[in-house]
Image (cartoon, rainbow, N blue to C red; front, side, top):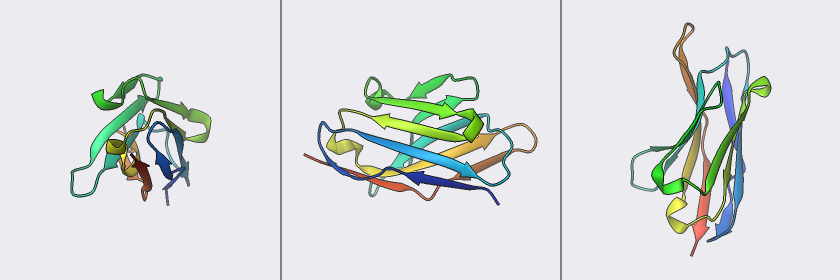
Amino acid sequence: QVQLVESGGDFVQAGGSLRLSCAASGRIFSPDAMGWYRQPPGKQRELVALISNGGNTNYVDSVKGRFTISRDNAKNTVYLQMNSLKPEDSAVYYCNAKRSRSPAYSYWGQGTQVTVSS
C-alpha cells in the first residue's frame, strides 16, 4: 500500500514563506515525476510545479520566481518552497507521484491547506 503524506501547510500573512513536504511510504517503484497541485475553493485543481526523475522542473506561470520544487530521489520525497506568498495562493495543495513505465501508477496525497491572509 503506497501512501503520500504531505505536511507543511499553514496560515501565513502575505509575503511570508512556507515549505511543503511530501513523502512516499510503502513499496513504490521510482516515479518518473513528482509534483504539486492545488485546488482553491470552488475551482478546479491545477498543476503548480513538477519535477522529473532527472531534475527537470516546470512551473505554472503564476508561481515562477516565487516557488521552488525539489526532490530527494533516495527518499521518494518532494518539497515545495513557497516564498512571497499571495492571498491567491490559498488552496489545498496536493502531492502527486506518477510513473508511465510498467508498473504504471499515479498516487495522490490527502492534501494540506495553505491559507494566505492579505
